[in-house]
Length: 112
Image (cartoon, rainbow, N blue to C red; front, side, top):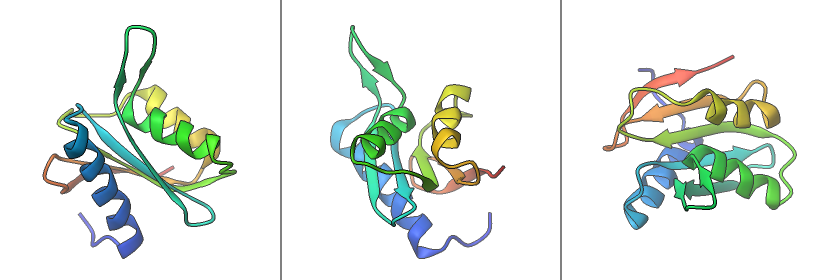
């Protein structure tokens, strides 16, 4: 993988920290077009289920974000759900989506 810039590394670190703090299956973070960041983890309630990336996008939207520049997910899964990526694309058609392993190493980048 190519070297990440500091802002992209920051959202990976935030995603990793969110996951570690809660012990969730996944942690995610997004950066909006104003440079603000939002992190979240998997939500697995009987009445509500969200991937970490969907939850991070929801947090950004709830805070007034109008666009996304980048997103990151820390997961052991070999891929991301189409719904997770679609949530990012709705606010950031050109946003890079980084998938990192549990140690924070980027294993895939989805760029439109």
